[in-house]
Image 1: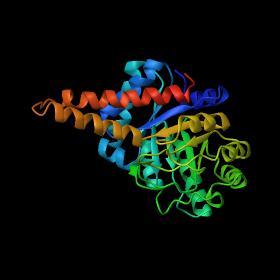
Image 2: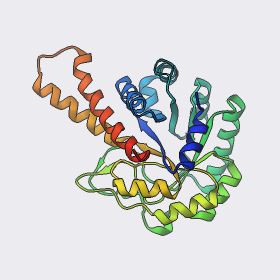
Image 3: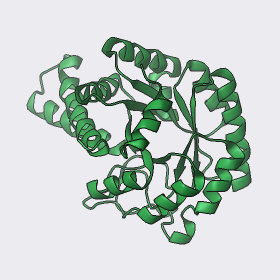
Image 4: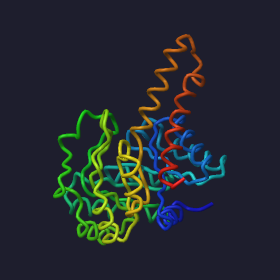
Length: 288
């Protein structure tokens, strides 16, 4: 079976992207995995610090590995948005396929130092692990938003500059880079998220010499996503849209079947709703 590194490199060469979908439940893991298997494309299951605390760090690592074996399909696990070296170490030691150190709220110098420390440890334990760094602050919560968060500045002066990205990669040696390019975590209610800076994505990819990752892709238009992938994005993150699908399907089922008490019956519609979202996104990311 191909490694995650091979899948990302092949995706970029083909001008498509590997989908990355977050979950905090096993229904989500199965929804993501089955959608990828159905379309015969690789996929990444993402778990933030909060999501993996809920699932159990080692439990989710074993679970995704078992799902990969059972389906015989390239399904990988990423420690999404990890804010300290200790939490990076925890995920690496548990056997994750990839890990993100998120130092986007730190100074550039602090981000570089902690990112480099995290990358060195990760590769010492697992030479095949994918290490990702983040530049530029895009918020932290995958939720529905009334407006762009006050602490997120989408002015072009606050977005990542190509020369800074190049310096960051040179100093840290990261495999993947997630820059702020007009994206935000979460999604706006009732309207698409702000447009992505496609020209900036292309310039950052050329300067950094690394595949790029687009975080916070819930709420972006399909056209923006396609253009971002063509410009150099090789991995795309989606979370909020899955959470909304889960909630809405669960609410609808409980309203229509108030006497049902079997969890596997209650949760199945929510799982299928998430799977539909994943399939739709994977078609966009992979040009299907």
